[in-house]
Amino acid sequence: MPIKLTKEAMRAIFPRAPQAVIDAFVAKQDALTKAGVNATRNRLAFFFANIEHECGGFTIPNLTENINYTPARMAQVWPNRFKNAAAVVAKYGQAPGWQKHAFDDIYGARMGNRPGTSDGSTFIGRGGPQWTGRDGYAALQRLTGLPVVDVPSMASQLDMQPEICAAFWTWKGLNKFADANDFLGCVKAWNGGTNGLADRQHLMAGNDPVIAKLETVGTISAAIPQEKAAVSKPAQALTVMGATAGAGGIAAAAQQGISALAILGWIFGLSAAAGLAFLIGYRIIKGTWPWTSTGEASQALSPPSRQSSAPSSEPLSAALLALQSAALQGQQSPPPSASKTRRKPSAKLSPRTRMRRASSRTSKPSAAKKSSPKRKLKSKS
Image (cartoon, rainbow, N blue to C red; front, side, top):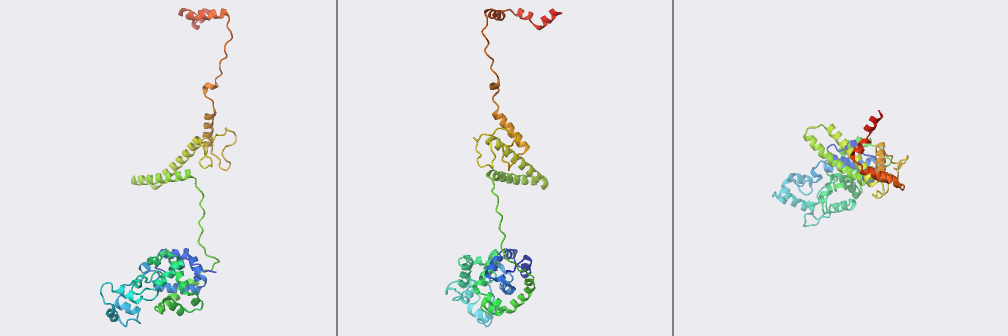
């Protein structure tokens, strides 16, 4: 069962590492699990001690080897090649760019570097393990899929260090050394010699108490993102409009010195009003709701009844029901002229009645005055 890394443990082992590296190791522990690195505490101890030594605990600039050596430093790193600093100067001089020529010579024609090229100064140490040589970069590319042969700087990518370090461990086959508790053999396989052996051992001793406290778990897997619910197009449009209006309102209000609470209140109020107006208008015009599958303008509205016409899973508020009912009544009620009852044609008039009507139409205005209500009341008194 794998041993689970925590942010606290990673920070204790690499106190000055960039936060991106710490986060990557905690989030991508499956890369170490595939390589078997976190299967035992001894493997983790060997793994972290050598990485910490190689890259200074992920603190060297750009996680890239600095080739701007002094003659004394070059003699110190390669004592088998140079007796002292004077020997370095004698071979390469001190003109600008002499270090590049030195690396092309020292690393040339080995580790897959092509003679007579700049492979030696191109495929220099990078990443946590300090991958070196064209063959090493080709192996890294094969194991991780990163195009580091064409873009060597990708071996220094901070968020990819778990995969890059685990790939180096796999390429060198270092599990067997850790399982045999052969730290010296692991160091020799790592860099071809015993450079920095004492420092590596010191670092491992300091990391042991931290690693001893880590817990063993059943499985380590990254969190699976929750599936997002589908959002209707009208809702998406409202969201975009609300965000745009909100951003403009915040900027304008900020210039006027208005508080953040007031801004938020305006945003929520306007968003709620806009959303409600949109839904009501859409329902009245289209005859359906924007989230339904049909939504056709020609779809007839059902007559109002005691039961709501909306789906039971989406109950309407009282305000919406009232508006819907009013709209339906307006659509279904006949025009006023149609509701009036036509007057039946009158029956056939007698000759005597015809004569009376004709005489009344041709009578003088004084006759009308005699028949007024005022005249009648006076005569009764």
